[in-house]
Image (cartoon, helix red, strand yellow):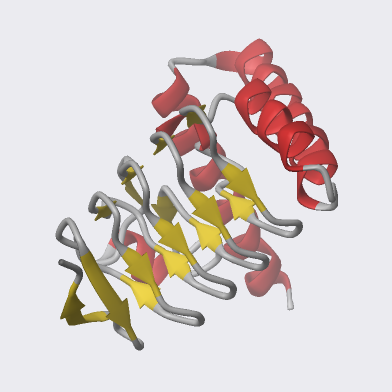
Length: 180
C-alpha cells in the first residue's frame, strides 16, 4: 500500500512540475499560481459549460483564454480543455455541439511507466477554422486542425487534421465526402 501511495505522489509531483515548466513558474509561489490559474479556469468553464446562452458561454471561454472568432455558436455542455485553454483557436462562424470535447493535451496522468516511456504529455494547439461544424459528442484531440467549412459527424474522434470542405465520420474520423 505504501509503495502505491509513493507512486501516486511521484506522478502528482511530475504533473505539477510539467505544468509549472510550461507556464514558466517555479517554487512555492509558482505552485500557488498554477492552482489559482486552474481554479479560475475551472470556474469559468463550469459557467460556460452549463449555460444555455451561447453568447455567455463564449464570453466565459474567452475569459479562460480560448481564442474565439465572430458569429460562433456553442451549445450547452461543450467542453474545452481545462488545463491549456489558450491553445484552442476557434475561428469565425463555428458551431460546437453539445457534449463535444476539444483537448489541447493528452497525458497518462497517473501512470509513470507510460509517462516516462513512449507516451509523455503531449501539448499542442487545436485550430477549428471558419465555418466548421463540430457535431454533438465529437472529440477533437491535441494538435488537430479542422478545415474551413468542414463537418465533424456526431460521435467522431478526430486524431488527424481534417481538410477544408470535408465531412468526417467515425473513430478514428475519416473523410467520407468532399463538400462542393
